[in-house]
Amino acid sequence: MMSEPGAGLDRQCDGLTWRFRVRVTPKAKKASVGGLHDGALKVSVHTVPEDGKANKAVIASLAKWLRVSKGRVAIVAGETSRLKTIVVEFKSQDEMNTADAKLKKELS
Image (cartoon, helix red, strand yellow):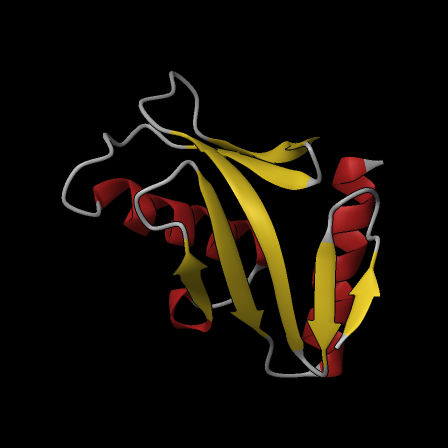
């Protein structure tokens, strides 16, 4: 697994898989993905953090933002915390390159 700075985001890449942290703001007025907080991608969702609703919203937001299906985005650590570890599995190198370009553009 190699480390990729990716425009300031603390991200590890292994083949077609990314692992990175997100900092979640639940009950936000505006849902958004973008910006950094201590090397973690900031994700804001409208949903309240109860019964996994905010986690589902985080997965949906990231999937839409990265243009992948929700089934290929998973929270692997921090399910009850604002700081979560996310794994994204891409189908192809082209799909990963597209997401990488978007990430670098949005965070630069």
